[in-house]
Length: 308
Image (tube, rainbow, N blue to C red; front, side):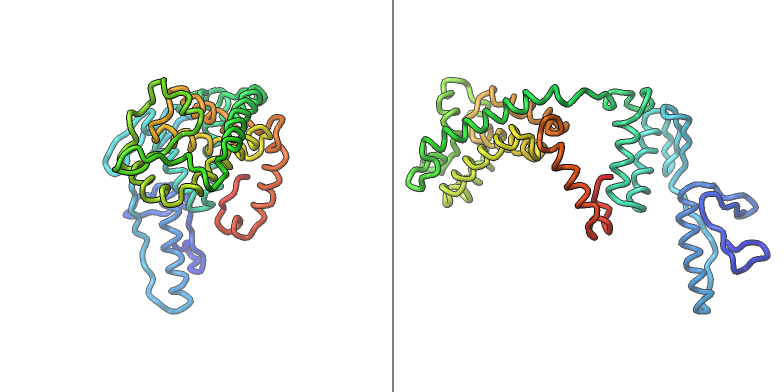
């Protein structure tokens, strides 16, 4: 990989011209990476007087794309065309970007190539690049938050924060304890629950972890409902609050005490994860501040675990 007539100059990269067995090597990323490894070894050999090694590339495959829709590829002997070839191109690009700049570069690539692409120039068309004003979700966010807050306040009034009153555990049979979803679920017992009985693994979890510390878990449920409700109403940490809403709803389902009406909590929370707190919510102010603070930390700069 030394320049002709300049033994102290090495040529590397995907634009380097180098003939191997009378043929020019492919000008691709794998050439750049493997030629760099060879040259690093040989420079060290120059300095320490060691033995140099020849450049022997090993390629996993090749791919060519025309625009954002058409591509052909051959990877480890497998030929691909169209959608699969283009998908493989994106996966390979993200693989190399992660090696260079980690999580930040991969996420930026996904946003640019899929979520912010113009004129439907993506293998998925413009389906996931379509945007709607976030303020349409404001009323839904406040409504879901109000329901969680009311449910939490009701539990407080019923005495769920009183250590002498345990509502979360009921010993209906000798086999162990089962979880209750709260007063809302009790009132809805005439409706058909989604599950006839808790799954075996959930019963084991209740018997092993919840039953010995019933009041702790009971208080956690109440405080979680209140916290989720307040967060959604204020639009603060909306993604985390929405994830908490999904988590609580799934627990109520697994306890076999929730009917199908609880499903809308899950799907509403998924919709709210699209940044519902950035319109008329505290996330509009708080999240940018946290991003700016985080990306200045030494850990974020070292690991690239931040979002530009």
